[in-house]
Image (cartoon, rainbow, N blue to C red):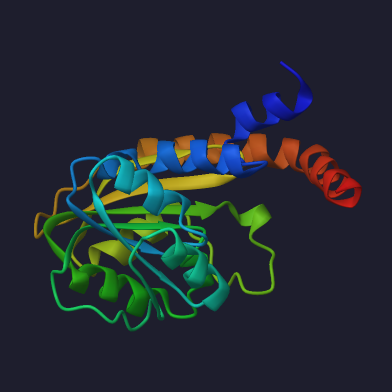
Length: 217
């Protein structure tokens, strides 16, 4: 396995369109049972195309007009809008997907409240966010520990169902429900702590690698 493939395998960090497709396929898997999914910060619509292939109706929302045109040109529904004020009726979807977007929220409580509003009861929310060392971008405003994101989401009727981590991403699955018993957070926090150590040790090498890669391209 060469260096590029090893990094992709180890971290889940997409390196090109093909890797973006593979990553979206992994992270959107919990939504396979859904019929109608909202993709928040849909980019160029890679996840929307995957949902369409599975027979799932996907709707994208983005602030980027160029991305919206690309999504529309591929035959997928898309609107230009803000996650803090979603232009959809209550309980419009049974799934919400947010990858590389929630960290852009300047008001996470309001955004998560909107996610809850447009989701049907027992609907699923998939959150995928970059870990804190990779969040130092101009428009990245927040990062969360598992306990913080769990507590925030519970205030808007979300129950944590699943959490996992790799070198680049924190991955959460929530269910909209009134039930209060959530997944055990101690084991999740321990797993998060382990990945934090691995991330800290790997960060200098990985950052140098990606900077070199970016310079060459």
